[in-house]
Length: 219
Image (cartoon, rainbow, N blue to C red; front, top):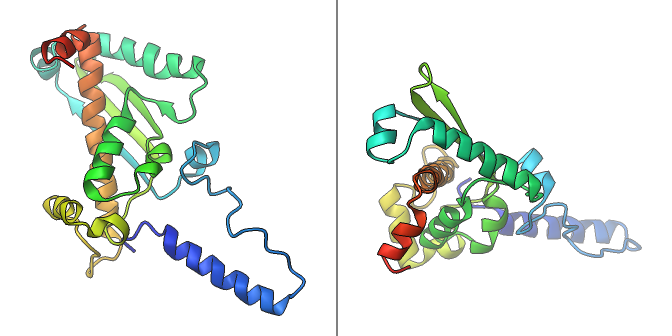
């Protein structure tokens, strides 16, 4: 469906455990969660097997856009992505953090659309890839996000401001025609926003403009 589903799963597990307790009175129930779900925690299982929605988003940015709009070049972006997002993250022992700042975008969208902000932890698992295409002239960029946890019904999605944001995105509530399609669309919106954020920050870094822009706007 279009709910994130954690509450429904918890209720279902509780009912199953209650039934089993009646059938097997000597059974000792320690808790309904054993933490293998790794909810709200960085874990390899979510990175490998996925959790919630798994999304890959990609785009091709033309050479003239890279130069005129992003103020850099394809070669510089490729080198920066390899040394920063891939090599640097590996040296730091990152778990699902092979990106520039995916969590900034994920947390912003989550708060605006009534998601659980704490699930930003695993939902921000992301690897950003860049390569040269079309005879090395253009940039191909992609983000792979295996565990985006979103819902368009239930919880904070019912709050006025958050409900309005979901409505603006065209994903408010449950889809009657195709159950689950609204939450899937929201997950793709999250990934698309992350891709745009990755391209923006990486371009600013490659062009040496990050600190200058912060100073200019007094941040």
